[in-house]
Structures are given as structure tokens and as C-alpha cells.
Length: 123
Image (cartoon, rainbow, N blue to C red; front, side, top):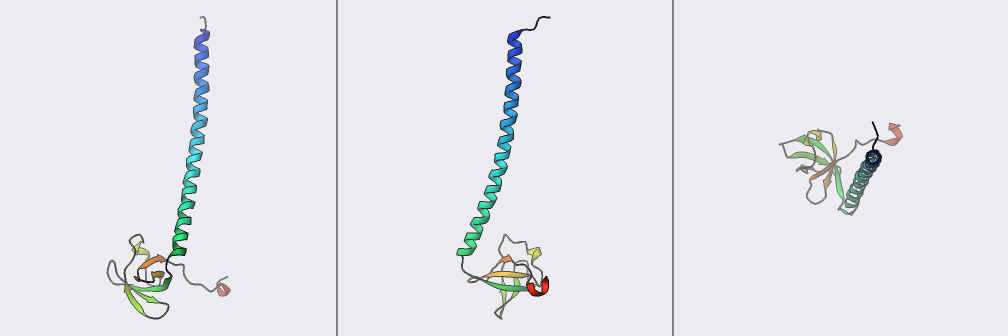
């Protein structure tokens, strides 16, 4: 059997192109991962900037849940309020004793806060 040189060259070119395609595909996958990471960093920076630019918030503590949407919250400055909650927050995490940040104007629960600890005692 004689080997056709044109066919051999075409097969070699095809194999070469397949390897190039795999390399380009791997590079594309890496770049997409980097893009996703950068997008997450950008979103976090945007949220941090929005938080810095927004009106101050009041720290409060959830006392109990009245209805699906309403909670009784005791503000650190004294009074107790019946307040609503942002749609994005999981209401299941708002248990009695949870520290929360309230919007200064609407008194809406904006986010959960970590529990309050005294660094001198805690560590």
C-alpha cells in the first residue's frame, strides 16, 4: 500500500489545528474564569461604595417576628419599632436576638450584622 503524501499532510495539518483549538479553548476557559472573578470584585466594590454613600443606619436587635413581613426591633438608641424587611434578605435568618442594620429614614431591615463581641474578652 502506498501512502498518499497529500493525505498525510492533510492529516498532520488537521491534528495540528485540533491541538491549537484545544489550547485556545483552554485559554478561553481561563479568561472566562478571570472575568467572573473580576466581575465579583467589581460588584463587591460597587456595593461597598453604595454603602459608604448611603445615609447612616441604625443598629438594632430583632425581638420577635409579628407576621411574615413585620418584625419588632429594639434600636440601640432605645425605642422599639415595628419594621419591614428588604426583599433580598432571608427572613428565616431573622431570629430573635439577631443584630440588624435599619435604614435611617424608612426603618427597614437592610442587612444582618455579626453578633456583638468584646475583643478584649472574646480572644
